[in-house]
Amino acid sequence: MKIAFAGKGGSGKTTLSALFTRHLAAAGLPVVAIDADINQNLGAALGVAPADLARIPPMGAHIRDIKELLRGTNPRIGSADEMVKTTPPGPGSLLLGMAPGNPVHERFGHRVDGATLMVTGPFSEDDLGVSCYHSKIGAAELYLNHLVDGPGEYVVVDMTAGADSFASGLFTRFDVTFLVAEPTVRGVGVYRQYADYARDHGVDIRVIGNKVQDAADVEFLREHVGDALAACFGHSAFVRAMEKGRHPDLAELEDDNAKTLAWMRDTVDGAVKDWPRFTRQSVEFHLRNARAWAGAATGADLAGQVDPDFVLGPDKLAAQRAAAAGATA
Ligand SMILES: Nc1ncnc2c1ncn2[C@@H]1O[C@H](COP(=O)(O)OP(=O)(O)OP(=O)(O)O)[C@@H](O)[C@H]1O
Ligand SMILES: [Mg+2]
View 1 (spheres, rainbow, N blue to C red):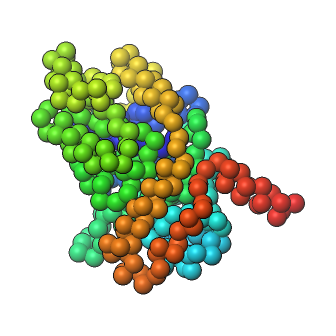
View 2: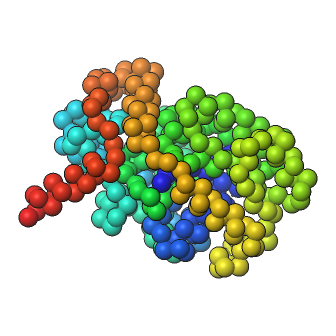
View 3: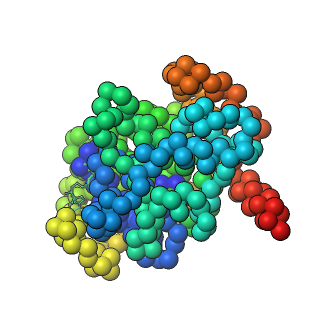
């Protein structure tokens, strides 16, 4: 299941991404956490030491290699240079699973307390005026577009703040989007912006109130986001300890906040996978991208990269595995 954490800057996206990742990993479940924010803070929130963080290869810096890998033998994609961040998979593409052996996890993943952390990388000085951060996040988009995840398998993505995530099709790549909102006017304002974009695309948004202190805070959130308010996470001494560089055991998290994490997992487990829609939207955003800029930028026939009969899903991954096993038998 693909899960996004979105919301206003400073609302708690990184904190809740990290805690939710730890919650899943502590239950022994396969979970990949992706830091796809300009402020790369997820690794620290997961308790990765700075020296180890510095050694994690950023996906955004190796996007060409990722394209080369994922295009596999897809005859519709002539070269990695013709591939853009929205190029959807088709017959011959390398599909990714969550089981051990995923080559993207092997190259870019860092194991931390049972979870796998990957990072898109920081926005560097060299990028200024040359490319935008969205091109780095494109590495995560390509990965998600080729990933066949099943029930009980989780990918948690810490997104950029505000409505930036809508600059590409990335926001349609998730089974559940947790919109983290503080009980403030600006916090709920970002929800409204998100909801407007998301409505047309069937994006499933659940608001998680954060830094909630009392009943009046809950009332405020309910008044402004209505039924979209799914759960609340309280102002937390545990989180403040994290902020001081400590990495307390998850068992020490306040009971109500632990219940919120468990509830979030139930929400994700109850979400329905819709591979035809996932495929349709990846094609839709690819064609939109092609018309807007990418066709001219690459000189490639981007529309021709789409196989109209291909629908991503577990059957395609199973077929790829069977073919690989046959080839080595
Ligand atoms: N439930 C909470 N209780 C107490 N402090 C919290 C809570 N949630 C987040 N914070 C604090 O709020 C600040 C912002 O949190 P965080 O970095 O997770 O937000 P963010 O949305 O990822 O921010 P950015 O947009 O900068 O990436 C941090 O100092 C964090 O420790
Ligand atoms: Mg953050």
